[in-house]
Image 1 (tube, one colour):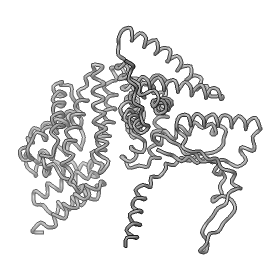
Image 2 (image 1 turned 180 degrees about the vertical axis):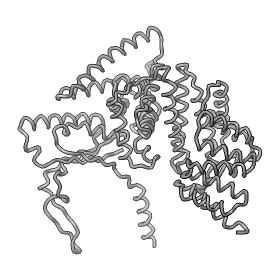
Image 3 (image 1 turned 90 degrees about the vertical axis):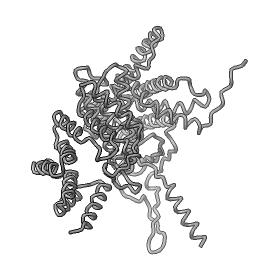
Length: 439
Length: 134
């Protein structure tokens, strides 16, 4: 029987397939190319050329069984071709050097592949290693935080410059330059593409987790584009957890952060009204909380806690887990939350944590105790420009019936708040105060 | 995404080169363009004749008037337009930064994303339909 003739693919079908392949594979392909070529720009360009080549040749040849190796070897060929071309037209020393290096890498990896075929080793692990390397490079402490964030979203998550710019409310030209500057720093400082050695791993992982959390927080507060960024941050957290597990590296804080993000994300549908207005925990419709995310978040938090090597992300996740497990604000175990904040304060002293602890104390010991703590905090000056400190104070004053004080604090908070939903929320609270009888 | 790349040139740069230099620039630029085309980057490319061949139309005292020459008098003049297909702005920058013309000092290149007027177009069609229905 003759082999079945492959159905010819239309160009539209094919470009849809290639686009989804880009979403799922570009991170892996790019990471491997960076290792093979030793240069991020070169790797990116070669990868794009390989995807273009796929669009050109797959209508005739059909989609290869293993698109990823096809893309990687095509890209490598394209890169060598490009270097040869530039070298021919009086290229720089760098071109010659890269050209030779790439040829050597090619020979080496061919030899490695042959060996692996003998040993029956899958190259999956090698590719995961490449991705982990690239994550550590993008989040290298020598890069400015906004550069780390932009580079991670583009090179690891596969977002376009325009998509990232939209999410951070900057122009594409501004964001493009951040990426160019970050890449130039990687080149100039010769930041290596490698997973840090175990002594450094924890500290460097801290920088990576911070980038992931920055992306998540941007998504948490951003009005319209937030969901997408939070999703990417959760995706990154999962990727990191998987990659580290592949190498039998157990870092409880990775679990803690993923748990924390899932627990916070589980409330997304409940924390804004259909008009985009902010709804506080107290008034949230808890049936809208995402039970699946809560279950996963709690499980992750529990494993992190069991390790006894947990840190600040895990403790914050544990606090979020107490809320997630309560059916109302009144039935919440505020004493447990206060204890967790005490622990958090010990490992990560910060006035914002103190503020949250004060609110928890107000919930279990009464508004007056909470207010005392907040007034002390404000008197120290650290939080005097932080709108949430003033709105928390306002809320406690309101509960105590100290209306003029509540009004003054809401007004301060409103003057400091920048996000539109928060401003609307504070304005609404002020309006309600004015309607309070006895004013 | 489509990017419109406006290539500027200082008048006289090219003319000031020796014949050998000119050949070297042209050969390298053309070969590079073949490479861009082969990789699906080129949507369209339009070289322009020199600025002295330009004519500018404008509106004056209720009618269209004309002047010789380009709209803006600057040191660098628009020399050609390339419509580039690239994944995003950084990709476009990377592709354009490799154009051989740069190292020969031919002049700057402005990159602008193509605007998507689909929404505006739809809204306008709706307005016009409403107008004619009245």
